[in-house]
Image (cartoon, rainbow, N blue to C red; front, side, top):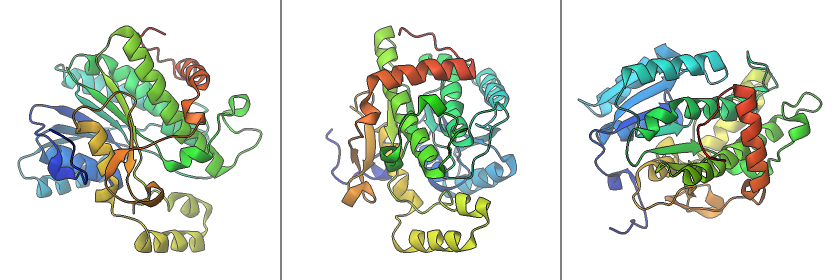
Length: 314
């Protein structure tokens, strides 16, 4: 069946019997993605840092989709011990495996901080945490046919560059530059993961998506942490006037996760002006995001920093 030109969640297939994890699912795009996956029959785990907020989100989803299967697990992507604990506990509770991992959680343009493992916060949370999580859940993903990993990137990857000489921003830190680097890392990770899966003969698809400009609380975190109320007010106004809804922003992720016939390493975004709004379609990426040498270098560095080694051909 051909893909509809204006694909919506109504075009999603039946997901009964499928098992999914969505990180950062207590609000925004993650919540809306989890909602639709659960409504279409998937057994969904909301992997969240704040379990109380996660339970509130789960109750909302149950209200939207009565009878759905949704649970909550604690996951702090900025802390590798939390990533390891979540992966171990989830895998023990789900011996049948995992069909879909949505690497959605993230932070944006925040003041510099270091994670408990000594990583720059945005690189550690947005990239390294998801790199480690995916590797630790790889056995569960391989155990299921037609499984997928979808990592949420951003148009901000176009402002990013891989500064391997100062990857943690200790000499010079720019909040937006660090965010761009973390989102560029998401795309390089997706491409290198798919390359290694193909070399190893593993029928798992690695995908990426970006939401365009969607109205969520992500944009307000940086100004709030800096105590700049006027910036937060400006961001809130922009979201109200220009942004599309979180429901629309979740469509590229859902398309990458469920649409049939997509090749590995697909990148999905909105089809509107400058990819800021609209329905999902395959989109392009920057030349930096197509740099195979940087993708391999980032992979080796990520395995070294996280201590998570993937059992895949290189």
